[in-house]
Length: 437
Image (tube, rainbow, N blue to C red):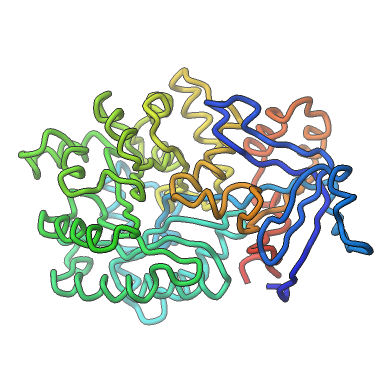
């Protein structure tokens, strides 16, 4: 990182969300064609048009010229698996086939000395290169895998939520833990990392089929003891998964009932996928304050299904987006948004480009209960932001110059953009040099 600076002012086009465009319309998105972003002590001090803010600036202030670029809040990925980066883009059939052939071997490999540190560094560098500044992350079952991720995130000053996977059945023996080991390791990780600097701990039961009732009960106890903990897990990703849950937990009416019995329906929980829910379950999910991470890229690769995004939106479910690496083939939130747009087209329920941008910024922050810290250029927020190059490719340069609306501009960036767009990543107002260092 560059040395800390108490004040920075950047000039360029600026866009962020104040609300969900699907609910509040275009007024939910704020756009300054020629704007100033004023940062003090790592937080947003002011944002507005260059003309409006000029009179408020200190005399002889240095203004960093980013005209020709677009300043946006850092992107937020609410569901991903860092140990699976090494198998990203390696299809192997449906969900359970993919887990057996790809995910479990990759996660078992973290037992090799030093590999967790290598993979954590690679993964965080790849996220940053693609513009992700905050993520909710599955580590491996090995406690040292969570330590490695948190240590590197702390070194870079990142705001991250993560946890070691909890599982005690229906996975290879090497990936299971005895109950006393799980308890001891998780307690230690919570004490070490939860609430330290910009880090938070997430209880991480893989999904119900991999967890005994004893393990799910322990998660409920941790949540009661420490309500500020997050919880992340999978929910109703495939029909086969739902059938397994019904057989393993016959006393519960459905997948959501099972998680409700163990206290998981709460603010601070993020469920990945949530494709196969009944209307009543969708309503209850919306009432609970729990959030959903839409993972379209992995859903497409595994043939899991098409997310009923509008139905969840209509029941007030907090929605966000997850790359779901490694079933998702890329750490790029932009590419994931492009897939989300395609999925909704296939469902005959088109999603607006501004709503897609919301899911990856303020929507992700709301899902993580962090909208008072990140996700927008709200005054007082932490200054995690990107500078995007509107001329990153010849085609983007041509097309963005002719865009006649903000909706069209954001659509071009999402559908035509990739990591080349991201020319600058700023964490708490400081520029990373180089990205991912």
